[in-house]
Every structure is written in C-alpha cells, then in structure tokens.
Length: 117
Length: 111
Image (cartoon, rainbow over the protein chains, first blue to last red):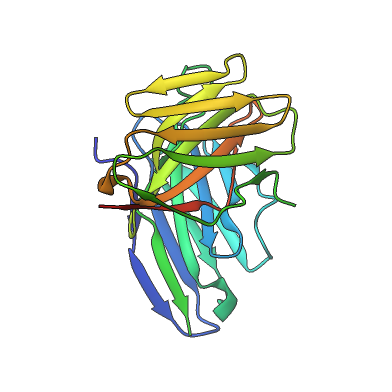
C-alpha cells in the first residue's frame, strides 16, 4: 500500500489567499484525521471523519478553516483567507475501522508545510 | 489545556546507553497509549502501544511502561542507536478514534 498521500508537500502563499490541502487515506481505512503541528502546541487534532462524516471539528481554529470528505478516498482542508499564523505543518492520518485490534493506531501522511507570508 | 504532556523537549544520550522518554496525562478515561516517532520532513510513524490493562509492553529494543495510578508512561530504548535520533510523541485515546498527542521530545543519540 502507498500509505497516506498528501499534496502539496510544500505550499507558500500570501496572506488573504485561499489554500487547499489534499489527502488520500489508506485504502480500507474509514477514519481520517487532520492535524496541525506547531512548535508551541505540538500535534493538534483539527477534525476527524468516520465513514466520510465529520465527527469532531472542535479543534478547527476558526471559521476560516473548513474540511470535507466527499468520498472514502479523498479529503480536503481549506483555509480561506489564510493568515501568517496559519503557517505550520498539516498532517493527515487514517485508521482502521473501529472494532479491530489496531483501530486506535493512526497512520500519518508526510505532511504539508504551509507558509503564509 | 494539554491532556497529554511531555515535559522534556529534548534529551541527549550516548550510543549504547538507555534512553528514557516520559509522558504524563490528566484524563483518567484514557485506556490506550501509543508512542510515535518522527523524522524531519516525514509524518509520525507508529512505534509501540500499550493498553491500560497492562503495565508493560516490549518490542525489541523498545519497552513502554504504564503507571496508571501516577498517570505516567515512559518509553525505554536500550541500547540506543544513532538512528533512533528523532522526535518522539506520546499519544492517548479514550476509546474513541481520536488521539491526544503530547508536544514531543527530541532525542539525540550521540555516536
């Protein structure tokens, strides 16, 4: 399996622009997570989906952030408008369906490093 | 507020010696704990886990210890190798899918 795929790997944009990050989870995984990593707060969960349905978006910092999962193999995280404080590494992760022994183990993509100037 | 805390941002150890990484948590509902390892420019990768019904889990050079009464877990790496140099994240789960992560500890193994 190719693992979790994220694109782009790097994104540099100017303040006020829209940014869209993309994620393809591991085939057969039905839970998908978006995280943000910063020096001060480490890995923060932004939102997660089960079976394409958003379950907990309490970590989404503001209305400028939105996430969608139109099907089991694709998710997007959008920031509009972007601000310099959004600069961070954004990770996508996926996990097995609940009920399996490994259901709590999440597998991470390589991340997208976002820089907002 | 951070429910999972790694109070040591960095640790340096000589090659061949033991590395001990510590993690504390506040939520008594956590019942599954994991350690992830992260190299630069890569995503975190799963290393080892432990269920709350156990107090120790071993996998090769890596052992995780859980002290539920103290709400503390630790990761022991012995012997430490230069390739172990990475950032280590502790994570915990309360039965749902979502994990709560610590802020990470950067381990440097000196040859």
